[in-house]
Image (cartoon, rainbow, N blue to C red; front, top):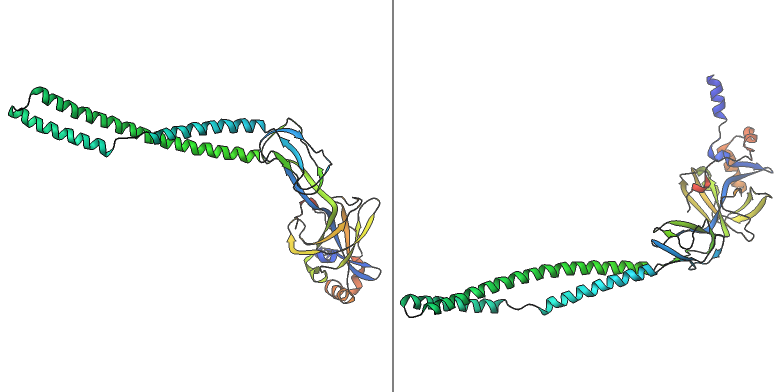
Length: 336
């Protein structure tokens, strides 16, 4: 039993071995890949509100900056006018506070003078040199001034409090006006890139929330083929290298391309490094997520290194395998 398990384990191919093939007595690398648009972008709502008119339909070609849909701006304009009226009222109230006032040190000097007069008349009254009426009048004047000053100070304190509250409210109104202005500047939903509008669902009169996905823009005038490269084969694949790609389509499509970029960081979904091969797509035959096999030719020197590193001559036949090696979900693969 242990011998059988050992025998079976010896037949398990590594990730690198699965990508090594023999074609016409040549050792090549055959990588799995899939098609992605040259560019793509989400279409999102720009603010919360009601859509007034939809200018584009699902499947339409759009150019970056095109208006896709327009919000109803009337509710925003009405709200802005209400806020402006509140601002005017608060500014008038603050202007009234500035015009008001009076009192202060001048009032205190009058009160101090009335107090001295009362003290003098009180002395004269006790000496019999002033009448009771003169004393009462002096006392009434002093007390009246005290009450008046206390009332003025209380009123002034209330005004300070009201002024602070009005200033706080004014700042809130200015903030609300800025928010409404921000929304007014975003009543158009704009295309973020060139391409075709897909998965687009929006109707006139529809109420929407802010920052909600309502479609996508996909540019497939050109595409990028992403290939999965086992880490051990990295030394044999270089940017600028020509490759042949056989797409799993009906009818089959074969295209030549050049490796434009190699990402040496292993993609978490595939467990592989990633190569990128850009291709023109004039007839849109290469659609997103179409799979293909990327064949990388090797120099004689690299072929010898690969054979020496990964398999023995008497076991070469077990690597002649055209079947798919990776069953990953390519749509979840990272975009680099």
